[in-house]
Image 1: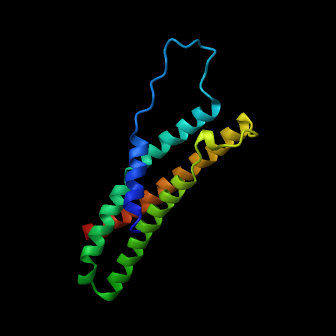
Image 2 (image 1 turned 90 degrees about the vertical axis):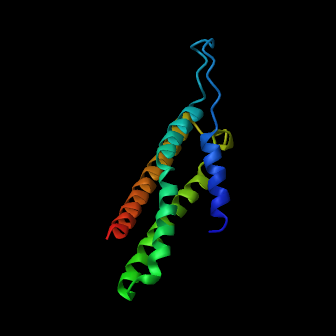
Image 3 (image 1 turned 90 degrees about the horizontal axis):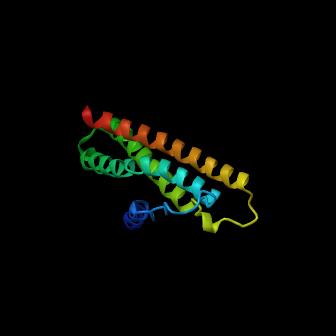
Length: 145
């Protein structure tokens, strides 16, 4: 968990790096690599979900700061919610670590296989987004009561 903050900073930096502008003078026949296009689509989905990570972190800190004041049954519920926050955050970190850049893919993959790979990765990140939103909602509900 102590390595999470530097990893998060690296990921945020990597995700926020400006992409190189497309050359408008290129002939229409020169299209982006299909792997790059699929990669960018999936990365855009990730970029929409990634900001929830900082919310999870903030909510986890808030819950932990108040947990000592609770009764044992309440404490158990709060620990469960803290665990769901941590699990969702870890799922995002794992997904990012396993997300392949187009230049790391084997040359033997076909365009269809590449599309399928990135479609799968996009579905995975969407599921992680739902997991993160559910954990966030539970934590916010506890803090309101």
